[in-house]
Image (cartoon, rainbow, N blue to C red; front, side, top):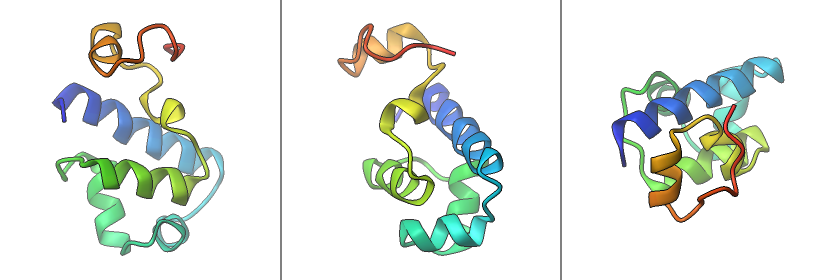
Length: 88
């Protein structure tokens, strides 16, 4: 996955978790992973895979669009999302 997109997703995941006042342990449990794995995803220290995005969506109760919001338009177009996601 593109490094810039991974950083946007990591930032959005941290923001969504903070906004919900959830602990990493809680989000990790809901997502079905350990807290250290979630920490690596949120910090950008783990190369994101599709399953990581599903883990985040499940754990945070958010959508894919929530996670990629604010990503550069050219990346969204490359993913086939064009104007479907409103950048932050």
